[in-house]
Image (cartoon, rainbow, N blue to C red; front, side, top):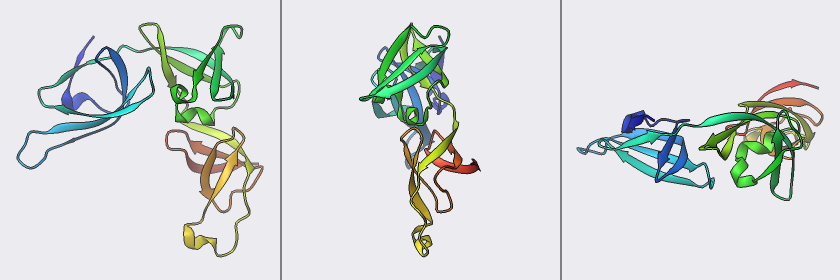
Length: 190
């Protein structure tokens, strides 16, 4: 159990506040006029999935959360429930809500191995792969003259997720995306 100074609270760190674990989504240390610096953060509660904003001041110290992880396999999602099982034992299944699984879960293909995060033996959330290669199932054709709007179109991926992609991406192609931002990265192949 280590204590973090206000400036050590950075993105991707896990902290404990009011007995609950939080993931730091964003952190920005700045100073307003003649005042002391503050660290303006966005924190995601790993139990409820809710995101809140909190400002840490120079005198603040916070406990770093000890998060354990284990490998689990994503099975499927239905009616807002995301089903997983233990990597070695498919009979031990468990579910999460879409909010608990997180926004990156929409890019998971069945049978993908991910890391489940645990705090005091309680399941918190998941550490998803940063990139995913997915097949495009629906892509409207690019119309000449569309480049005035930035040359983007909305496509649907094999997992059902929709993202913005360049006009040259066609149905049936495999593309690589950044799961953190949900952005198109590159075309991989057919």
